[in-house]
Image (tube, rainbow, N blue to C red; front, top):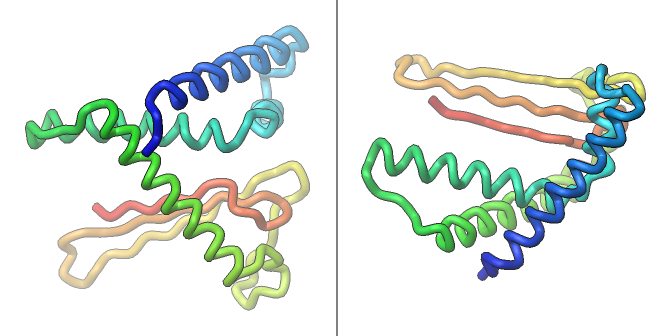
Length: 155
């Protein structure tokens, strides 16, 4: 179980860290490119950023649940729920990287990594023959073939 106070402290620390990095970048006048913003994000504690993003998503998802089905979770339950989801996701990433090593240069798919310092977005969509739903997915990788972020959605 995740303690709400420790998560609140971690999010507060992460927020301060991001604010300092953004202020430094603005002083240098380097906030005008995507590449500079990527450099800032690379300096941020990735674990803290992942927790922060999951909590924000959990709050948003809970708001939707309350709006559409009139049921929702209490704040502490949201924290525990998203912490479990994040743990499950991180576990799947460990399993995925041990099954499919990041060295994808010999892949038969013909995928080529982006130039150093850039990211590459690949996406796909599928629609079943009955047309009742569809799915989309995307993955962003860096020049080493490491997954930066991935998503999938069934609509």
